[in-house]
Length: 289
Image (cartoon, rainbow, N blue to C red):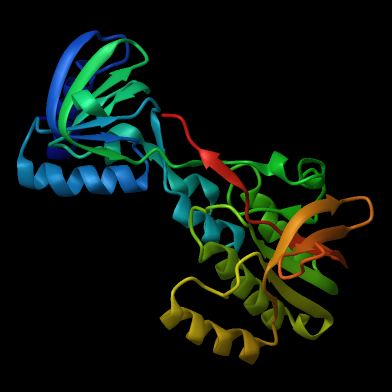
């Protein structure tokens, strides 16, 4: 006799097979969600449970779902990066339809999205949750720097596993954590790994030999006043240097130097800082789904 969990997976696959890429024609949903990341899946699950079966569609071309918030713990050596991935079919809400295709055209005047393979999807309400793309190439020298063992980022699958290795290798000098001038996936993540690094160095008895620096392009330590006030107490208590309105514009990997534009200056001067470890938060552009 088929187990209940196996039956659920089987029925889910049956449902998905009728929604694969290559389908043409027209569909209609009360709510269409474009994007099957954490935000899109959570939204679809919430409304599918209220609207009922077949009322919510999720437009997502990929077979694998990536839970990126876990990458902070991966960078801190607490979790494995493989733990952040699951088959898309296992996270897709059972009451929603998975349309395995990507959006090609948005026609808001007609309440319609046309997919890459020609499926026309009508909707009453639309949620666009396509995410954003990491753009390491927008910082001069950063692509080359990420090939070295001492420059890393928690914002990419390809670089997040380097963070813990760099943390373990850090013996002395400057450890710089940055926040960009562009939109960002998770504003707190740039600081979370900084605090994990601080805790790790204290545990290893090396914190007194390392200067931890947070260079942010923003004029505040965090965008929400309530949390910003608390965070100032945290960084002061942990001896972390915070420099606001410092935008990373260049990395010189051979010299282990990071160049920052001082946004408060009318003369647009730059400041160069030597580092032993740099964990970089990224520039972005809108994703394509």
